[in-house]
Amino acid sequence: MELGGAVTIFLALCLSCLLLLSAWKKMHKGGKLPPGPTPLPFLGNLLQLKTETFKSFMAVSQGVALANGERWRQLRRFSLTALRNFGMGKRSIEERIQEEAQFLLEEFRKTRGLPFDPIFFLSRTVSNVISAVVFGSRFDYEDETFLSLLRMINESFVEMSTPWAQLYDMYSCVMQYLPGRHHRIYHLIEDLKAFIAERVKINQASLDPNAPRDFIDCFLIQMEKEKKNPDSEFNTKNLVLTTLNLFFAGTETVSSTLRYGFLFLMKYPEVEEKVHQEIDHVIGRNRVPASEDRMKMPYTDAVIHEIQRVTDIVPMGVPHTVIRDTQFRGFTLPKGTNVFPLLGSVLRDAKYFSHPEEFNPGHFLDESGRFKKNDAFVPFSSGKRVCLGEALARMELFLYFTTTLQSFSLKPLLPPTAIDTSPKVSGFGNVPPTYEMCLVPR
Image 1 (cartoon, rainbow, N blue to C red):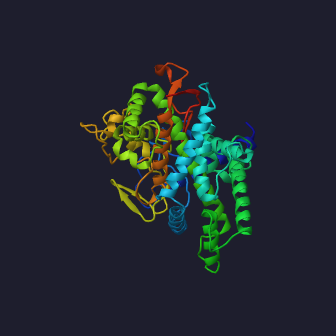
Image 2: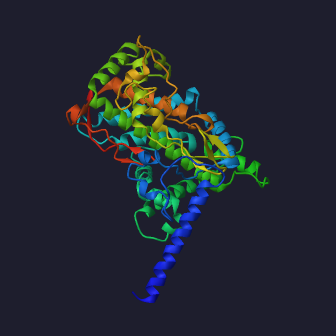
Image 3: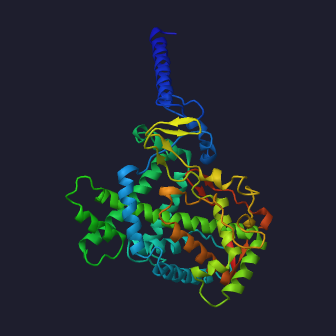
């Protein structure tokens, strides 16, 4: 071997050892971290992050950061107030959902019992609910811009759950210069941001500070109030990103849960039949379902909870950052450590669910058939970072399921036993498998 080649290999080995030593020291700085595989130089624990990222994270302390600290506090407090002012938790939002559910029924009737893919049927109707809040109006179902946005959101959710996305997130400073699939998610998000930025300009041009029309108007008004505050988080960048977060989450998580739910009901037709019976008994065939009906429908409520538990749409939850050195079960998490709450580990805990890997609405029913709360039901996370839209999502799921099943029976294209409910992709999210179904009028 030539001297130059030998020197190069020697230097590479020395650099690798130094990087490995640096990583080891970083892991042990400030205390004892929970156990996990030893990270490799540059790659870290990437090799342990297989296609099913949630299962991989069960063995690795690993994470990516979103908003934290003062920025998170300011934006969350404002967002909760603004969303409540535009109907979250009030009757007006229920009326919007009921109206959109009726539009959905019209689209379902147009299928005339023939097979169809429910993806965009469900994403259009769910997205219009959050669109009315953040943009002040709904979209026509055939609007090409709207359909393009929904395609981007759906594709983004898939891309976010691929190993490429994890690699890009960890090493964006390097990956941005390398070719590959990881650039797709970046371009999708940039296109979505550009759409929202354009909507912001439209709102700015016609803003009346005394009569806010939507979430964007409220944010613009707050920006003006705090324009002299150097520590304010109310700026155009945060407006675009916060609106995108609400629009994206308000569209994809609920519509994906509905898609999963229809699939599980087709796989377990006896469950669907019991839901039909309860709907007929409590609501009937003609009256529009209302959120107050849920209290009288324990079985339907249990079914929806079980769908959310088993599907576990966002298994890694929202990342948290440790704000001080924290003692946890004999380990020390240094200040600044990123932590993922693995919601799936709780949703499948045998201590709280008798058959955690099975679809069983009985997990949420007592011996008398009454609905039974379960402290381990945390699909919206818990604590201060619980999902902003939990109340909205709960209302949507109940009203969309009952409205659909009041009018239709679900018909699969395969025998129930042949239906596969495994996620299409499992990473940041559990993406529902692609399938077709038929709807038979009742």
